[in-house]
Amino acid sequence: MSLSKNTISPIDGSVYVQRNYANQEQIDTTLQAAHKAQKDWKSIPLSKRKALCSAAVQAFVANKDTIAKELCWQMGRPIRYAAGEVGSFAERAEHMITIADSALEPVQQEEKAGFIRYISHEPVGVVLVIAPWNYPLHTPINVIVPALLAGNSVILKHSSQTPLCAERICEAFTSAGLPEGVLQYLHLQHDATEALVGSGQVNHVAFTGSVAAGRKIEQAAAGQFIGVGLELGGKDPAYIRADADVSYAIESTVDGAFFNSGQSCCGLERIYVHESVYDDFLEGFLALTNSYQLGRSDDPETTLGPMVRASAADFVRQQITEAVTQGAVAHINPKHFSMDETGSPYMAPQVLTQVDHSMRVMTEESFGPVVGIMKVANDNEAINLMNDSDLGLTAAIYTQDIDQGIELGDQIETGTFFINRCDYLDPALAWTGVKNTGRGCTLSSLGFEALTQPKSYHIKTKL
Image (tube, rainbow, N blue to C red; front, side, top):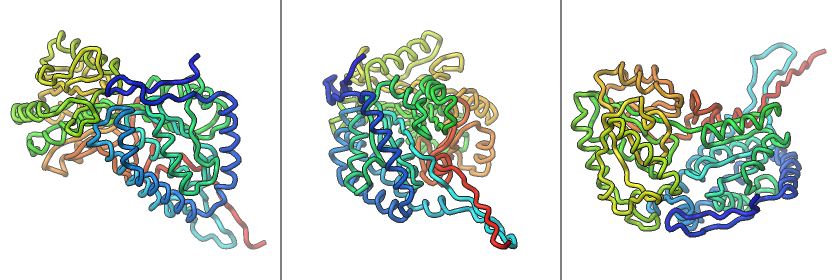
């Protein structure tokens, strides 16, 4: 069993970070500190908890350039976009800070003579956040800030691909004056993570990752009677209706399919286009896709960086090859993107037509820069195809008829429904999914619910 982990940068294959995994003694010490600190932290007034979280966010943003560079080298986000995740980190945190008073306010019951009755929101205790590499700032902050505001302590476990993200987040909160033990990180192997989940020493687990890994987390938590929030990916669809603004839809969906090299749970992986606008949409989609610049993510001109590792890129290439042998048509010539090579994390974007749902590329999460486009005859056909998936994170419809779009959206099995946009997260709305995408939600006022437990107060004032 390895005691350390090398983070291999997808940019050039070099070792960018090396960290030792925590041993059992370090894990136990972290847990003890978290439990001890949480008892004091929950008694601190919410106003002070909010002020500390705000100061931490400001400290984090002040280090934006360093964090963006590290993000670029750890997981391959083009440097021109990397700082954007720092900005979104702040946006999400600040929204949760803003709504904390109302979200955590006791629920008062109607007056009843001789009684006071209300329900308070109590912290659950120690929250374990298991964060992914693809959005290593976005996803953990969705839980960290509301967990801290609610009076919990937090242990952060990041992917071994992005260990510096955990360290930078904790550094920012420490510099802001957060008491020792309230927010800590651990670098852990998979078996140690599962053991921690099942240890009986954590009270809630927030996990973002694959369906297979989510099942392991849920199994590890079985019998502990703790909350488990799972966001496990998507195979997100879009439908371009006959009345859509085609030029706008092209710009939006190309970005939705290929931003972050397609390595986004809510990225578009399948697009259904009404037959009346199909040809125009496909032509424009291909032209815009061919304008992308595949290259090193530390190059400011790059708009499509490498995938996180060569094996991930080759998995997507295999999906494409298999689909083509089954009759799909690949429209993008990889030679146009000179860095595309089998066995390399650098992969050209690909657009497939003549696809159907017998092909893995239309049913299995690709998590890479490929999208399948199908022609449909009507709304009913599109909705049936959009729902033909065991995943359900987001779905989008492009239309100028908002009322009809909402009516169609009511029929789609998804956690978030968009009209005329995609691949976006609004912190005022619950981030959630259906089917094998998982359970629970983060963000919005509902995001506090899993991180708190209700406590009822029934007080008789007259004897």
